[in-house]
Amino acid sequence: MVCTFWAGTSGTRSLAKSKSILVLNGPNLNMLGVRQPEVYGRDSLADIARACAAEAKTLGLGVDFRQSNHEGELVTWIQEARGRQAGIVINPGAYGHTSIAILDALTLTELPVIEVHLSNIHRREPFRHQTYVSQIATGVICGLGAQGYLLALQAMANLVNPKKARA
Image (cartoon, rainbow, N blue to C red; front, side, top):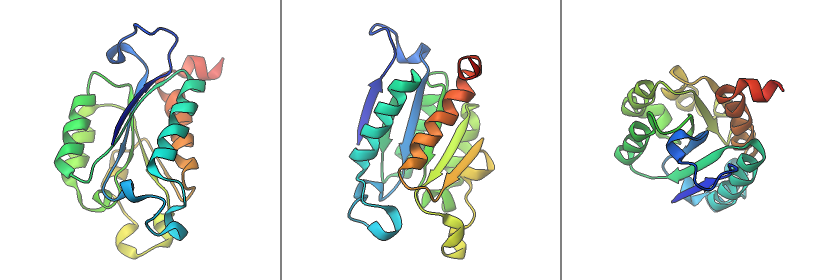
């Protein structure tokens, strides 16, 4: 799933020079709404993408919303964000607990990163309590369901445009 939304005021403005945020979703997140709704909620990934687009519009941000079940594809998208995006919001799914490659890619972007998890990973199985992504993340939001994505975009707006956020 790849959806790009630009919520800025100029239709000719390039994403490379915009305040565009890459929102990445890892494995199995394409199954939201049907996969363990008691844990992950009833919102589909498409529902979350629409909510992120609406929130980004109010924040004056562009959003490039993507999902892949393939670690290498996520790494490539992260690498491509360097110099193109203003920040990254990532729900790495299970790759958060296993992928040094994603950690390394996030590190090399030198961008602010906010990690999101729908469930509270600290109230679940012990292997979920730590993630590699958290080592590089500017902030981590977990346990707030789909709302976590919107909070991450709000926080990212403050990180990439602090003067506007304080005005």
